[in-house]
Image (tube, rainbow, N blue to C red; front, top):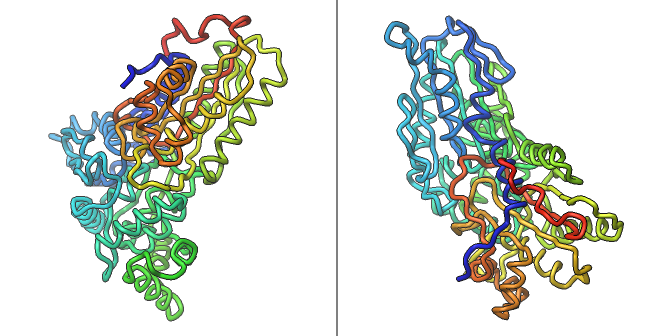
Amino acid sequence: MTEQVDSSNTSALWRYGLFAVDSELLTSSKIRLTGEQLGLGGQQVSLDEFDRILVVGAGKASAGMARGLLKSLKPLIDSSKTSPMEISGWINVPDDCLEEMGPIRLHAGRPASRNEPTEEGMQGAREMMKIVRSAGPRDLVICLVSGGGSALAPLPVEGVSLRAKQEVTRFLSTHGATINQLNAVRSSISQIKSGGLVRNFGGHSFHTLILSDVLGNPLEVIASGMTVPSRKQLQAAIEVLEQWDPDASRVDASIRAALRKQMGESQGGETQNEKSVAAAGTRPIHNEIIGDNGTAIRAMETIAGQLGCEVRTHIPEASEGDVAEVADQIWKVAEQRIQRGGLIRPFYYLSGGEPTVQLNNPGGKGGRNQHLTLLMLEKIRQADLPPTLEIEFASLGTDGEDGPTNAAGAVVNREVLANAHRLGLDAAQFLASNNSYSYFDRTGGLLKTGPTGTNVCDVRVLSIRDRENSPEDSFTGNSL
């Protein structure tokens, strides 16, 4: 293994992007306590109307969101000995996000390295349902949702086992299904998703703050829309199975049976999702996005511009396609800028997204960010570049996870290329075997952040500079 190479210019930028979507800071900035008035995003509530504040939620960033909430409610908590207000709650998080949080219990819904539903997640989902169903007319419910919430809060419908749900999730995710397609199936076979969490809500009002990990921010897709009733997901789920398992040989028969049962209910009356829609119409239920992929990219754009760099950005509004297509699009931007010439200052192309990867070798090790970076490495290596031109590319998951690995992503620069050449590594072989992690582990290109406490898809940085015109790294010496 080669020691991790220096990538100070790109790492400074993406770390600034991560700071901009810090879940604790974003949440505390959206919650304002002024006397007896509590601001929750764009909504205002009067505390004298409540006896209890009940907190539920799930997601990779929900622990940080809970810290932000409690920080904003601290004056209320400190006065609890003299005030009748009660604050309590339950939030499902990965097991590496556990910490003591006073009135709110953080529950390990799954191991950090296993992004799929578990028995522990089901236990937590039942507790959240119990809390919401217990809410009365003087109760306020605050729900904190982020990406990863879907796998962290599984509660299959009757007739579908947890194992069947795990298998269909694994099958779709490893065969190239988009996050929207995956969530359509998961939500349609769940008691808690597609508005299931609010189906039996009887409290005063329900406010959900959402940190989005889905491009375009479709509320019914983020964490499978636990507080967002949707009529669209059932038909979409049926179409997904028809596309990816047309002969019904790969997905457990109970999944299709559950979907057929709901479709029959739809023809004869209301489905569970439609009941959720109807119930939501009679209760004050508010859902608000507090941060997303664009939040991170725009922050990166601002700092790069302030430091005098030439910047171009791209924030997708819908699911991206195959990872190879994404690499082609990024490289096209690089080629256009190189051909235009006149690089008197560093050029940065900042983008976000979440491409899909078709697995040819389930035994390989890597993730979509490492795979994308390896594709970009091949393009850079094969390009006929002027000797003074330097290109660097990095891609990482903002949650600090890239597939089932301990890396957030990878970087390619001249050091990584030199190490690969010295070791005689063939990138094409590692790409074909879906083994990008091993390639970057040996060349020093892995980016390891550990859990970041946030989750807003992926961020990518492409930099191009001419050493004759810009001999120094623009970010050196800047504290970001």
